[in-house]
Amino acid sequence: MNRTATYVLTIAVALVLICAVCVAVVFRDSDRATNPPPDPHADIQRVYRLGRGGLTGGVATVEALDQLTVGEPARVTARVCGDLSAACEPPAPSAAASSTVPGQSAPVPVGARIEVIAAGGDELTVTPVSGAVQPIFDRGDWAEWEWSITPNAPGSLTLTVRFRVLLADSGESLVPDTLIHVPVRAAPKPVNPFTRALDAATGFLGAVWAVLLAVFSVLGVTVAGLWRTLRRHWPRRPTTTGAAATTGAGADDRPAEVAGAGPGDPGAEPGDPGAGGTGAVPHGGPPGSPAGS
Image (tube, rainbow, N blue to C red; front, side, top):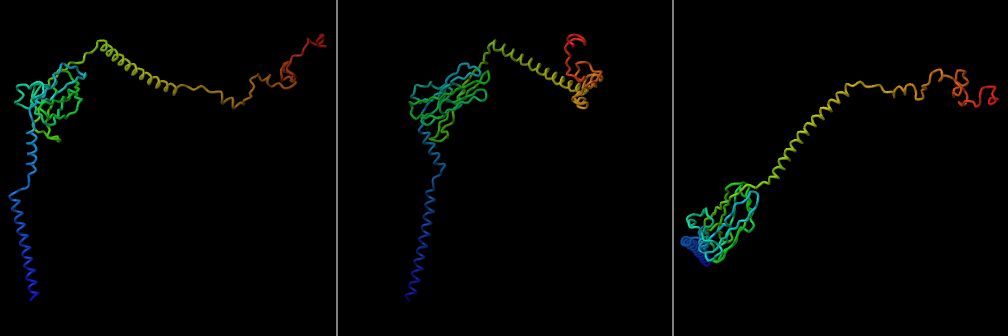
């Protein structure tokens, strides 16, 4: 009997636990249905709304440029000011209708980090002098950007300055970007007449030198080829080195009758080494003279 009661109690406890689990699952699903998890997109939109809500009125201006010269750099500056700052000129009347402004000023909201970038395409070389991003949070604040621009071609050019209002510390734009197109007139670089004449003379002399060098090169090649041809067909004269080696190094060039005379040879001349004497002429006169005796 006790064993049966134990089994019944165990089964009852198990059923109660199963029911509790089922009830918890049902309540959790109903809670999810009534309170869905936050949408990440909604959070982003809320951040954007908060960011836009912190913006106030402002204005952006770009310095007007005088006529530039090709190849010579010039400085250009842009400013963004709050609506309570007197550092900027008021925006152009037609600037509020579009985010692309052909004039020198345009409305740009402040109250965030502002990024300003200038570009001129292949016709203008633009080098930034200041940082691209600067904060402007107060209506009385203002910031300035500066670039060095160099025209690469003469004529009517365009410098485009882009203003971006950034979201917090990110690179996302809170509002559409504002563009200001600045007209630039570039004149050709003046040339000194003396320099132009010197360049022309240098070019002429260089051309003449190139022609002379080519002519001398051709003549040198021609003369070298002709010399090789003449050397190949020119008759060679016999050398005496071989004959001397054949006849002996000590050959006597004297006449045979003199060279062949030996010691005491009657045909030898007095005083000749071949006559058997010393080769000296005897002192004194002829025989019978006092010197000969």
